[in-house]
Length: 87
Length: 494
Image (tube, rainbow over all chains, first blue to last red; front, side, top):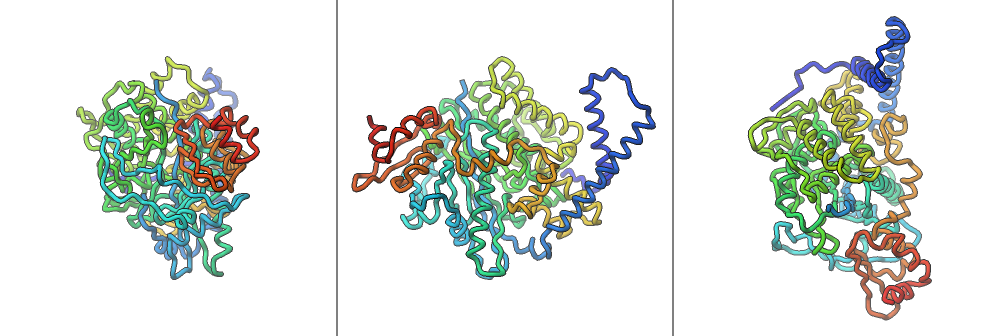
């Protein structure tokens, strides 16, 4: 049985940056990929950082919203959700 | 030539009433379904005469008692809607069977309209319940305690295609399509290996390859041979292996890719042998591996991942369509299928806007990181359930939708319109329009018939054995020139 429980799972911020990085690279491919990097490395790094922070803030806000709507007494709630088998 | 892929879905929802000591699922379902009101209050029967769920596609009839409720029970449990859908009580679950559609875009619109219809009736039913109780409904497939309920897809197929061939090609396709169709589930059940999170809600429940059963010992391929159409020409493939999906993108790709593969089977375009050595074992193991790297054994020896096997189907689909005229929606399905496969090959977590199991997993992992929770936390289990809550203000999927964090296929206006409007290009149009225009004279309905009770005359049953006839183009003039049901029936006979 393949289990991934023990493999290291990247944390949320790493994943966000990876996602953002991946999106960047696809955009570049779409742009034709003539190799010309407008804007220096430092500027690109700064942009990436800002974008990363923006996404992190978004994610924090989302978790806050989940907190607001998530049912209280989760343990009892989930325990009491019992269905009859269907098709 | 493959027949047009007329299709539809049947979704059984989970239902409970909180703080009700005497909660009875069946009476709650009856309350729910009857709380939904359309403009008329005619009592219309579901016509069980036309049904035969015990016919097996392998060519025999299984012995058993056919279910036929008495008239009162029939009316209490069945509603046929003016959008052509059937909304009813199936065992201990409310079920919504959407009207027949001809493409996946409309399928998404109508499956989503079903969610809203169930939510409208939940609110109405809630008003009739004692204070302090709360009716809750989930579009999922399991209570995570070993009880599963279904979400079925139906596709029109050519009767001439042998069922044996369908089985051979679909087993590997169904065992592996969960990499992009799974709705995601925390933990495992039904005596499966323990795991933190898996791709599909249903995969723990498949115990055999092919059978007629749907409630016990569930098969990957169900053999129910009930075409609801001309049985000389068609079969209806009844697919029970899927999950109830929330993501529009996932629903679209699920039915789109499956319809394409079915057309390819009909046209003899499955050219590579990708049969699995043990599909039942594979479907569980693949579901338990969110990295999508696990290898399963092909019957002819080599091992492949589910993603590689799906890539084979996509390649065959691209070859199949390259020499054919294809409609824009099928083209779009291919583009999306390719997009999804590329990401599954690189990193499945890149699909956190598109594919249900990834959307849910990313949502839960972000929550766990920030809250220090783990896969066993009650809050995480709650999120797994609440992702499927059909209340717009409580459902976690809807929260993401509102925030623009998931890809959509349909827009809200289309979905709202489909609550009262049948698709225009199938017999659902005739069914829905008859109900809207002449509710008091419609006596009974089934997918392939509608019968009228006019005055003291004997019941007249109109058969609709062709799913593509009865469309707006076919019957618009007939309907607009008939001012009563009696005239309609007369005009039909003329």
